[in-house]
Image (tube, rainbow, N blue to C red; front, side):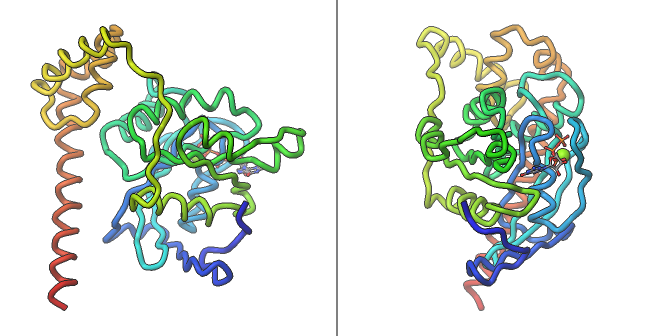
Length: 276
Ligand SMILES: Nc1nc2c(ncn2[C@@H]2O[C@H](COP(=O)(O)OP(=O)(O)OP(=O)(O)O)[C@@H](O)[C@H]2O)c(=O)[nH]1
Ligand SMILES: [Mg+2]
């Protein structure tokens, strides 16, 4: 595990700077997801220098919070999401997390898991890996695991999952710098993950292929239309209603506007860099 280092660490040459609420001109968006009470907001605070509410009970973060940091001059927007057990869950704060993960297309999703209760936490990891290969697992509370005599083989876990796994003790800032190095590698394509998700049986795949165009007719530009198609086939009434009422179409429009703005900003920055 990496050493603990402050917001800007000279000893590891990372030059990480907390930017607090200043999310201007970010290049990449990183989401922090995970079960309730795994230390997401603690990781968020360590990176951004902000003071999101933390405490030892689940359900503290109920809306998404945004902050920023930079590493070696590259600015990242970090989004702290409410805790969620599953992308299929129903409560309103869990829906905030689900909608962001599914439809806002962050450049990387860090799933913060409780190292003392891996089995329960891996359910969400698999669900996130289904929607993006740009998943990084942050095995937090490694000190608690050690205290309880639980040994977590991070390398083996990464092999089994097919995505990077980083151990942290977020309350002390330990491993957080390494986490961000790995996130940067995933975002930049230096590390290409190969998530080991359960393959869809052929007959079901055909059904999904047939439903996807119908979903896109009702909600053009919807990212993860396959996920929506699966839910419809499963008979998920909330998803069906969100599609019927136009809620999903609106989410798709919003996320497209955000993506277009980011692309436009990138090309403007590129043009300015070339001309200077
Ligand atoms: N021992 C230990 N405690 C930690 C660590 N990381 C976070 N904590 C503590 O765990 C508790 C939960 O942390 P939060 O950051 O609030 O967790 P969260 O995932 O944001 O929780 P929700 O927003 O409710 O889902 C707090 O009391 C933290 O101080 C760690 O690595 N080790
Ligand atoms: Mg929180």
